[in-house]
Image (tube, rainbow, N blue to C red; front, side):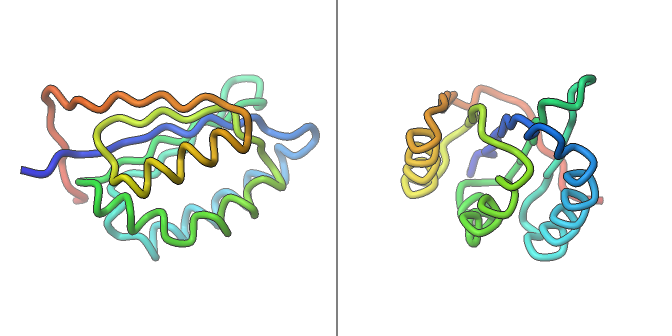
Length: 128
């Protein structure tokens, strides 16, 4: 049985970019929804101060995460106009290439990557 993989992206909103970020983020999320149907969840949350953004990504398995990562370098470059990386957390076992991509990105940005590889239990419902 394949195991789900999730990861959390933590980002700092660049000074003065919050209002520009909101419509751009909605547009980017809609494009991901249309273009990445195997991404089961892509949920973005702002903190109360509007200075931190957290994104929860959920995939049915490592292969779906790999497909989500296709084009991610371009998407990240566009997003970094509005935000800067703070850190990443991975839950489950992504493919070696996805994990390497995250390690390289974290090292380049000088942020932490935390990995929780062992799935113990739980469930994941599909899209309605």
